[in-house]
Amino acid sequence: MTQTIELPIWLLVIVGLLAAWVVLERLLVPGVRWFFRRRVNAVISEINRRTHLRIPTFSLTKRRVLIDRLVYDPELLETVRHHCEETGKPWEVALDEIERYAREIIPAFNAWIYFRWGTEFSRRLVQRLYRVRLARGTQRALQQDLPANTSIVFVINHRSNMDYVLIAYLAQRFTALSYAVGEWARVWPLRPLVRAMGGYFVRRHSSSPLYRRVLERYVQMAVANGVVQAVFPEGGLTRDGAFRDPRYGLIDYMVRAHDPNGPRDILFVPVAINYDRVIEDRSLLADPARRRRRRSALSAALGTLIILGRSLRRRWRGRFYRMGYAAASFGQPVSLNEWCREQDLDPRHLRRSRRLVYTRRFTRFLMDEVGQVMPVLPVPVLATILLSEPGRAWDREELQRRYAEIIDRLDERAPLAFIPRRRPVYAVQAGLRMLRVRQLIQAEANGFRITPGEEPVLGFYANSLRHLLLADGAENGVEAPCRTAATALAAGETQDTRRR
Figure 1 (cartoon, rainbow, N blue to C red):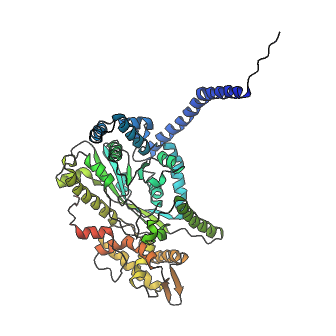
Figure 2 (tube, rainbow, N blue to C red; figure 1 turned 180 degrees about the vertical axis):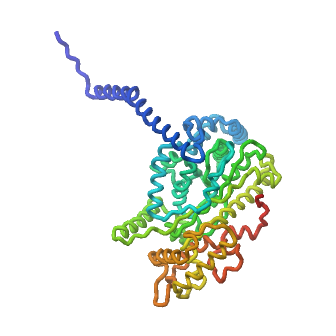
Figure 3 (spheres, one colour; figure 1 turned 60 degrees about the vertical axis):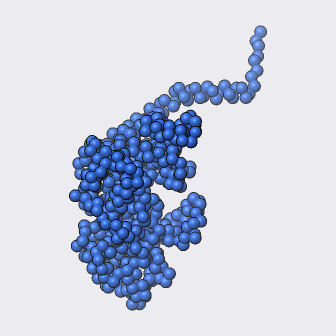
């Protein structure tokens, strides 16, 4: 006699889901993991053959392993012990806190995403928007043979959020970069993408001593293991086109644990970035009252999309021009070992107050080196000339003559990157076209004149070169509205950190 067994539909669904989960976990997931791991390993092997600097094993270590290494770092555990003794906080609570900080900070670098997707995206984006140039001859700063135990730190000025994309694109032939990213990127889907690209998050205004110590130990571990760092000492975007006063937190983390007589050296590579157009220029020039009212991420994104939409519309109508030149220039690397020997100091044995004096001096020296290799582009030079006599109407021939004078004067003083090199006729033509598209100047019968009210925008671009013209002495009557922070620092403090 046949007996029928009835099962509730919900129990049947649960049994089916459990069976599907077992099949997925035991059969499909391992195969998928093997497939992607094989592709990632192939990419790593290709990149290590193609790039000048190999990807360090530290970047390829599983994130869970890095978190454990950081949480149970002996120096960090000693800090936790002192913190618990001072505050009375239970040991387990403090450990949970530093583990939460470690999870927040440590990236999840993925070589396939970085070199297959990230660099391709950055290439397409910057080439659609700009005429990208890497200054001639500066590649030698990165292509020279480096000792095996050498860490690289790129020190970069910060003019636009496009800096991250531009440097990642230009440096892809050399190595992969690790950025310190602010809290603005800790939103989905930016957070997993930034981590996969090797970026780590920084709470810039955190007052927690444990958090600062966790961040410090991670930076020191990454540098000690050869992870190439990209640092923006200004801590934020320029507000007037000039250098901001540098912050030295991340550089101090690197300096304070460095042994100048040890086997590993740290090379700081100055990198200067300049643009014919910064997408955020008008937002950066907004009055202080507006800047204090922080824009939401949605409003900032909408503003960028509006600008890109207008560019696409002009492209559709056949009137699209790329936003001029975007250029980067790499200076000669600065050896931390050599600098410490010149100063006759060992940072590990200095009191904090005395060490910070040297760190500030070193950071200012690096920013001065960044300023000395600033690319000279058409729009900044034309803005400098136009602002020398704001009410004047300039004819094209006079602009070309003044442009050539400035280039000749700067060329005699330092090996700067001139884009396009020594072609004032073409440079003036390209610069005027960009200024007219943006309606910063207006054409008249007797020449070109600044559009009323647009002087601050032109000053933003002129200030990117003002420190070079001031260092050259008299500016031949050319004046810009703001004085750079780098020049102010140089005037207030004797520069005694010259390299050999």
